[in-house]
Length: 378
Image 1 (tube, rainbow, N blue to C red):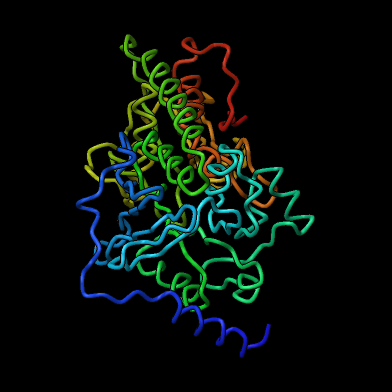
Image 2 (tube, helix red, strand yellow):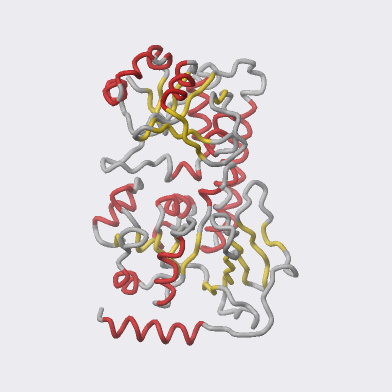
């Protein structure tokens, strides 16, 4: 595609997409179509046969929320609407995150995916086969995406993610080309069920509302029932998380997603004490002290065996959990290139992660459960 065509396409799209009015659109007077229970990053409102989707900008407090008019049967947004209009159901989507794939596949909509980012790191066998057969194209990574290929694909939407500073890279470029970008913030939810509740956003885009409600209610029910197994257990094994990167060991704050899962599974996080969702660095010396007193060690980097772990750092051999063999990693379902299904389908399968953790920490409560995401290091 030559440069003239891209500029021409961009110019036509800009003139046809602008809606300039003095009144600013607001969702204040709209009725909620779906009221979230666990998630905090989105809202869905009624508007005739269509709907309005608000994605809260949790990744950059200095930016406004993103508003999308999800148009059905050609319905036009209000004159005051200055967001992005998307015709639904979407039939052609580019996914910049592998997590997008798992949500769409749960709704039986994997066939609408026409482009992905980082195909080698995707776990879904169906999507990998479609990439191999060039039914789905790999458009590259955020910041260096193949814009000409994106224009050739001409997706209804590009599903991407917002990161402070980085969110400005892909969005403006694609919007200049007349392509529509939808920011997805599921990864910012610290509640495991809140992260899974983003299924309702994908359902609104694909007209799968009833199926999504059924699936999400099932997830909540299973997660809640498994949590009840822990309620009568007085013993809470202590757990160390993560592994050093270079000379620093990053550990999550008390409100972090993984810590929440660990707590729900009846574990005691040894690095607790920081009321935060973010990870913080601690020295290797302090990390050794924490790890040495822990009953279990989870998610020790990319290690797939005890020998590999100890080879990276011989001092690990003195850690209590290494000596007892209580080390588990969440890389059981990994691609040869290093992709992890834990971060792909795990977002929409929190009940399975919770079962794994309970099987690890309290094996007597789920004796028949086979680990799905985690593997014991030998």
